[in-house]
Amino acid sequence: MENEATRSQPSGCATPEGTASSGSPVDTRRRVAELLLQNGQATARQLAAAIGITHVAVRKHLDAMAADGLVEFREPVAKATGRGRGRPARTYRLAPAARDTFGHHYDDLATQALRWIHQHGGPAAVTAFAGDQVSALEERCRNALADAGDDPLARATALAEALSAEGYAATAKAIANGGQLCQHHCPVAHAAAEFPQLCEAETEVISRLVGHHVQRLATIANGDGVCTTYIPGVSGAGLKSTTAIETPQVRNR
Image 1 (cartoon, rainbow, N blue to C red):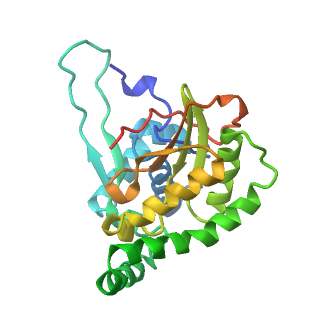
Image 2: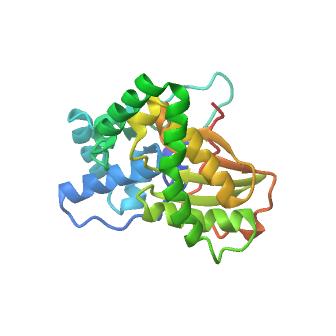
Image 3: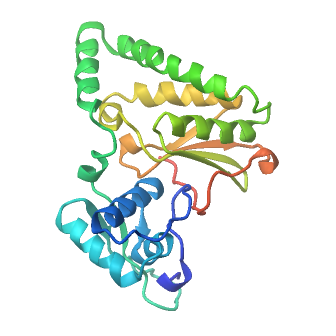
């Protein structure tokens, strides 16, 4: 069993390592929120290591954020078999209220518009609308991938950078049996929770842009911390990882 002392970095798809806090509680809590957004979940010790402050200090910030309804935590579950050294660590994740501070201002309007389209045109109209909406994003990202070559994982790296420029906080990395593209923010997560056609259209765009079949393993809209897209059966030789923090694969939903 892994304990806090042996896990020095936040789990999650990818994020650059943090820098020391400026000392302002507001700045530090914003950094904590960014790390939890990027990684899905983390322990206090992992966050402290990434930010560059003490474990005790980050716990105080987490307690304050939890009291404000911005952070949720999960107590460790004891394993039925095996013994480990140390006590397993509590993990933290952003509460929905905190996610709403990261650019969800148009989400409610998008949901209302999709409801209107569904009411007057049915599911097929929503699917057509979703495809039309991601077409402009696809074109911009395709231009950004012009010099990425044909390797799917090299293209995933370039795509992650392009999506980050669009506000998706995306990262890419090679894993043992393929590649993984993660989006740590979704500006229309609430709308996509009600209308999964948005996620489906986006997944099709990712597949076309990397030039390979992909599989969506998790989405923020479905309650996961990160949108994770798996690129199966390709070599990791062509991928320059955009990640600085390792992560386990997200479970298939």
